[in-house]
Image (cartoon, rainbow, N blue to C red):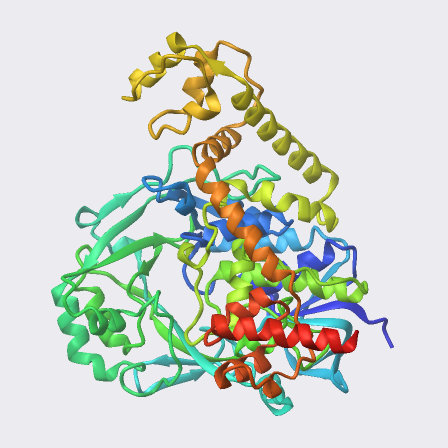
Length: 624
C-alpha cells in the first residue's frame, strides 16, 4: 500500500489551490485531487479578482506566500484602484482578468512546488477511522490515504442549476457534474447541512455590441497589481464598458417574475444579498430608475463579454429579451445563458477557529462549503486551512489570526463565531480596525508571520526585509527631520494651508490634509532614504493618520485582554444557571476559545460575559 500523503486537498478551485500551495510550503507531501485538470483555478463567475475588502485579502494571501495575487497579475487585462477619492482604509485594488491566462497561471504556480502532486479524479467518500479522517475514496475505487484532508467542494455538493422554473440540471457549475455521495456521507455522519444559492449572468458576443451607446472605462495608467514579492509581466490592457438596465428591463422582468427559479418557487436556498440577481434588484428596489451594468472582457483571445449586474435565473428567451432592452445591447447575441445554482453548505459554527471540523479530527473545510461567497474569501480560507492541516501533521499548534491582524482573520472569525444566514461576503465595514488593515501594509502586518512559519523562500525574504527597511528608514527620516518656516511655508502655501512660525518635524506637518510627504521631503534639502512608490504611499498614510491609528491600537490592547481570558473547551455551559438560556445554548454550540470570541456571538450579552468570568474563575479555584 502506498505511503499516505501528508495533506490531501479535495477540489482545485480558489480555496483548494491556496490550501495545497500553503501545505506544500512546509515541505510536506501534498496531493490535490480534482475532477478535471482543465478547470484548475477556474473563475466560475466573473473574470475579476479583488474589489472592496477583497483586494486587501488578495494582498494578505500574497504576503503569506499564496498564489492568487501572482496569478491575477499574470492575467490582468485591466487594473484599477477603487475608492481613491476616499480614505485609505477603503482603497481597493481590483483586476479584470483573462480567464484562460488566470487558469494557466494557477496551474503553473501549483507545479512550481516539487512536493505537490496534482491528480484527476472525483472523490466519492471520505475514509474514516472512528472520528478521524484518514483519506478519501474516488468514484473509480482508488484509495487516497492522507494524514489530514482539506475539503473545498465549492458549489458542487448536490449542486443544482436552475434556468427558469422548468429547467433543473444536476451540476456544480455549467458543464461539470455535481457531487452527491460525499454530501450524503457528511449528512449521515451528523453534520448540520443547509442550502444556499448563487447565480451568474449571461455572456454576450462583444461583436454584437453597439459601443457608441456605452461608456468606456479604462484602467489605471500606472497599475500597481497584487503581487508584492515578485513583479509579474502583465498582458495587453483592455477597457471595460458601462451601461444601464432601465424601465424597459424592469417591465420585462416584472412581467416574467413568476418564471424565475427564485421567485417561482423552484429554489429554497437563500442567495447573496450583496450580489443580487436582476430579479432581486427589481423586487427589492422598486423605486430605482435604473441599475448599472458593466460589460467586462472575458479574455484577450475572445470577443465574449461578461454582463456584470444582470445575474438571473429567468428562462433563456426572457434573458435575451431583457438583454436587448439594455442600451448598447439592442442587437446582442447571447453566447451563454445565465443561471442560478443551489448547493449544500455546512453552517461554519461546526468548525474550530483554525477551520477543522469539530466532529472529525484532521478534516478541514474551506470556501463556499462554509457558507461564504467569492474567490477571495475562498482563497483566504484555503490558505489558513492548508497551513493548519500542515501544522497538525507536524504536531504543532494551529495558527489563528485575530480580527486585529487581517481581513482573513475577520472573515474566519465571523464565520465560525457568528455563523451565516446568507452567503457571506467581506466588506470593510465588517472590520473594527480597518484603518490598520489596509491593502498597502500587508507585508508589514503579515510578513513576520510568514517568516516565522517558514512560508517564504530566500528571494521572498530578501524582498520583505528590503521593504521593511525602506519603510523604517523613511519613517525615521520624517520623525527626525524638521523644516524651517521658510522651507515649510512654501509647501504649505501651495497646499492652501496656514504657515508656521517655528521649526516643525515633517512627521507633524504631514498630518495636515492637503500636504504631501514628497513635497515636504524635497523641501528639507536633505538626502532622503531610497524607497519605492509603494513605500512612500504607505509611510504617508501611517504618518498622516497617526492619531487614528494609535486609537485603534489602544482598542486592540483592550481586546487582547479579553482574548487572554481563555475558556475551557469542556465548560458545561448548559449547567451555568447564571447565564441566559440563549447564551447557554449558543456558547455550548460554538464553544469559543476566549472571552473575546464569546463576546462576538450574537445573543451573548455583557452581563452573560461578566457571569461567565465568575463561573470560570470559580471552577479554576475549585481545581486549584
